[in-house]
Length: 96
Image (cartoon, rainbow, N blue to C red; front, side, top):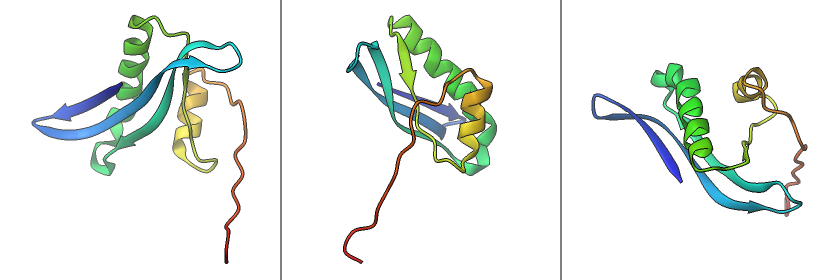
């Protein structure tokens, strides 16, 4: 599923997600693949996320899973909007 925000024919931002069942009995969910907002259009970010939440609710989904880098502004937005942190991701550079 994708939701795109446009203003005067210009794309301001988008949220794309995979829709389907989540392992471990969360029901039907939207799993975010990308949430992007142009730097010049950052004020549309929360409006876009709220519209995405409504679209998911209208589809009868049980949860939305969003991702945010630990030092990104998105993490604070998620917390303000009632999202709960679930896990921590680790990375390791290979071959160098």
